[in-house]
Image 1 (spheres, helix red, strand yellow):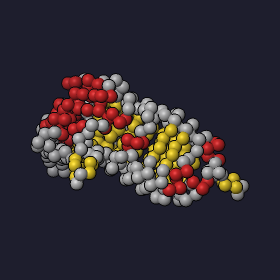
Image 2 (cartoon, one colour; image 1 turned 30 degrees about the vertical axis):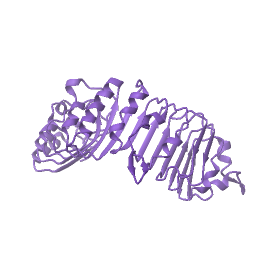
Image 3 (cartoon, helix red, strand yellow; image 1 turned 120 degrees about the horizontal axis):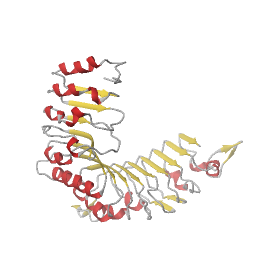
Image 4 (tube, rainbow, N blue to C red; image 1 turned 60 degrees about the vertical axis):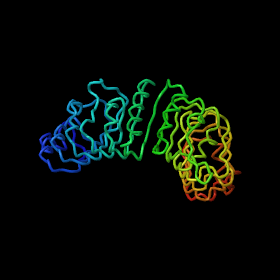
Amino acid sequence: MENAEVDGILYPRSFVRALGSLVYLRYLSVRNVSLSLMPSIQSMVLLQTLKLDVISLISIPSWLSRNVLGKLGHLRHLYLPISEWRTAPKKQKLRFDGLGKLETLENFSNLWCEAKDLPKLINLQKLKLEIYSSYADVKETMKNLSALALSSSSNLRYLGLSLTFYDQPVEDVRELFWDYNSILQMLNISGQLAELAQLFENQPRNINNHVVESPIRITSLTLEYSLLVDDPMPVLEKFPTLRYLDLSYDSYVGKEMVCSSKGFPKLTSLILCMLPNLVKWNIEEGSMSLLTNLRIDRCWMLEELPEGLIFLTSLQHLWLDSMPIDFIHKLCTTNGTQGQDYYRVAHFPHIDITQ
């Protein structure tokens, strides 16, 4: 069901209320629907999949805060709305009591979802959650996440974590990840980090035929506002499963970046956006051998694209967005004359340049 407006223009309230009579319904997806119209969900006691895909959630409807979801004891897959960052009164937070069969939970937010219910969801296999607020709130949520992830009865196999903070000591932030390195596959961090290596150092190692293997299984990593002074690439390029990397909005404030040979063995997408001091980027032969998508956006101090781009034979799409005119001219052909760096990008099938 889509676009059930509050004023009833597209779908009258009576229609939405009539959903409550669908007591045998197993799957329900609502899009662009005001959740204030949906208290009849509590009657769908056999529902197994519920997708609440609204544009944004500013406040929790009163019916939802009354633990209505707890009546859906057969629910296995729950996709919550993506919310705006607004905190809810503690007594009005969304509760998960009675959802012991839940296998998928997406868009959990500690601002409006009750974190202490997480350890009860022992059948969860996939969890995507956002943790945002002061360090005390973050630590409390992570404590409950640990109780779930480290439980002997836990079935958790995939963890996607978005962490936004402004006051955490990096030593404490580092410890938050040690328990999850085998299931943590998506990680987004927004906030200052003193040194990236500290976040992942001292991880336990598995010894296999005398070869030390990295326990890190992250496939998608986004860093924002990290203000890293040291080049992050020597740390990140060792992640054996990393496929998507987004370094944006002052995540790195240094001047030089190097991607070394054999680094980033699985990386397919790379975004560099608003790195204010980046002047030089070097790519060694053999680095990022599977890269197919590269986006460089508003890195205004970058003098030129690295010559090592000629080694990226798998790259299919290059985006250059809001880069300096002189930078772009080096890559273009003007009146039949190739720019001095044209040879570095000539083999790419698709190049998009926007100003």
